[in-house]
Image (cartoon, rainbow, N blue to C red; front, side):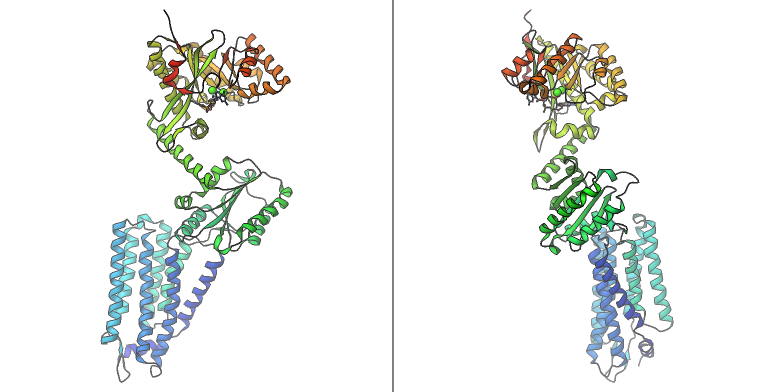
Length: 639
Ligand code: C2E
Ligand code: CA
Ligand code: CA
C-alpha cells in the first residue's frame, strides 16, 4: 500500500471544492445579470467555468469514493479521477487557447502553441487512461490497496503552467503591463497554494488554485464598465457586444437617441431624463443593454430572440417617449434599426448612426432601411476615394472631372463664359454628382485639392481653346469659403494658373457669402489680391443666405449670381418679382453684372431679361457638359 496516497485522501476536506462550485455559481449569476464585456474569448471563459464546476464535483466524488472504496466499484473511482484530472487539464488547455488572442499571436505561432497544447493534453489523457488500465499511474489492487506512484497530474500541471507563463513573458510587450502583472501574479498565488498543500499532504485546494486565474480573467478582461447612475455601458463595450453577437449570429435591435444639447465635454443627460430612459428600456424589453456612446448619444441594444414581439415594444416605447417628451423639450434624433451583417462585420454602428443623424432633421424618428445602409457604404467609398485623391495631389487625377455649363451673354447674344462644375468618375459608382461628395470633401478638408485639380484642368483646356482661336472671355471655378480662409489660397491659385501660362483674366472664382465676421475681413484681402492680377469674382447663390448688403457692397465682386430660387419666386409672385427687379437694378447701377441661374424656360428668360440681366445660365441653354464639348458653344475668332 502506498502510504502517501492514503494520507492524501484522508486529509481531504470537501470545503475547498464546495467553495469553488459556489464561486462558479456566483460567476454565473453575475454574468447573466450584469453587462460583461464579451470578447470572442468569452465562450472559452464560460466553458472554463463549467469545467471548474465539473472538476470540483468530480474531486468530491473521487475523494469520497476513495475513502470508502468498498462501497464503490473500482472502475467508478477511476472514472471520477480521470474526469477530475482531465477537466483540470482542459482548463489549463483553454487558458493557452485563450491567450492567443490578447497576445495577438500570428497564425503560425498560434498554431504552434495550439498544437503543443493539444498534443500534451492528448498525451496526458492517454497516459491517465492507460495508467488506469495497466496500473502504472494509479490503481487499486485487488486486495484494495491504493497505488499512486507516478504523479502524472503534477507533471501535467507543471507543464501547462510553465507554458502559459512562457507565453506571457515571451510576448509581454503585447499586453498592457497591468494585465500581464495581474495574470502572472494570480498564477503565482495558485502555484504557492499548490506547494503549501503539497507540503501538508493536502489535496483539498487543488481545484481552487484553478479558480484564481479564471477570476483574474473576469476582472481584467471581461470587466463590467457600467455607469451605475444610468445603467449604461461605454462605447468599447458596445463594440465588444457587436463583435460577440456577430460571431454568435445573433440579430439585435439597436435604438439610438441623440440630443445635441448634452453632447460635448463635461455635459451629461440630466437626472430626470436618465430616470426616464432607465425606466423605458427595462419596462419594454427583456435583457436590453444601454450603451453610452458619447455624452449626448445612447444606443439601446435588444436581443431579438429574447423579444419576439419587439415591434410592439418599440411602438410602445416611442409612444411613451412622445408623452414624456414635452417635459424636457430638447431636440432629439432617434434611429431604430436591426443589425446587418455588413455593418456588424465592420463594427461600425457608431459611424453609421452619426451618418444617418447628419441627414435627419431634429425631433424625428428614423427607421433604417436597406437603402440607408447602401448609401452609407457609398459614402464610405466616396470618402475613401476622396482621401486618396487628396493624398496623391495629382493635378491630372482622372477621377476628378470637369463639366461646364455655358453661360449666355445677353449683350453679345453669344456664349463666351462658362461655369466649371465638378464630377467624380469612380470605378464602383460611375459618374458621381456634387450632392454626394462636395459636403463630404468640405467636412474632411479635401475640398481644396479637388478645386485645384478642377482649376488646373480648366486652365489646360482654356489654353488649348485659346490656341485654337476660340473666343472665350473666362471660365468660372467654384471655391468653398473654407478654402479662401486658408493661408496659401492666393499662392495656390497663382501657381496653377501660371504653370499653364494663360492670362489671369480668363479665370473667375465663384464663392458664396459667409456669415462669419472673420471670414469677411480675410476674404476681402484675398479677393483684392487676386483681383489685382485680373481674376474676376462671382458672388454665388445670392438670395439663399441671409444677405447682408452692407457687406456684399464692401466686397469687390464683379458678378452677382442670382440663385434659381429667386427666378422661381418671380414666376409665382408679383411682390417677389418687384423685389428681385429692384435688387438687380441696384446691383447693376453699382457696376456689378447680374447673372440669373437656373433659367429653364422661355418665360424664365423673358422675365430675367426684364430684370437687368447681363448673363443667363440654365437648362434652357445647356445642361452641364464635359468640358471638351464647350467648342459646341464657344465661337472661333473670325479674324
Ligand atoms: P452651383 O454653383 O449653384 O451650381 C449650379 C448648379 O445648378 C449645378 O448643379 C447645375 O447643374 C445646376 N443647374 C444649372 N442650370 C440649372 C437649371 O436650369 N435648373 C436646375 N434645377 N438646376 C440647374 P451641380 O453641378 O450638381 O452642382 C451643385 C453644386 O455643387 C454647385 O452649385 C456648387 O455649389 C457645388 N459644386 C459643383 N462643382 C464644384 C466645384 O468645383 N467646387 C466647389 N467648391 N463646389 C462645386
Ligand atoms: Ca457656382
Ligand atoms: Ca449657384
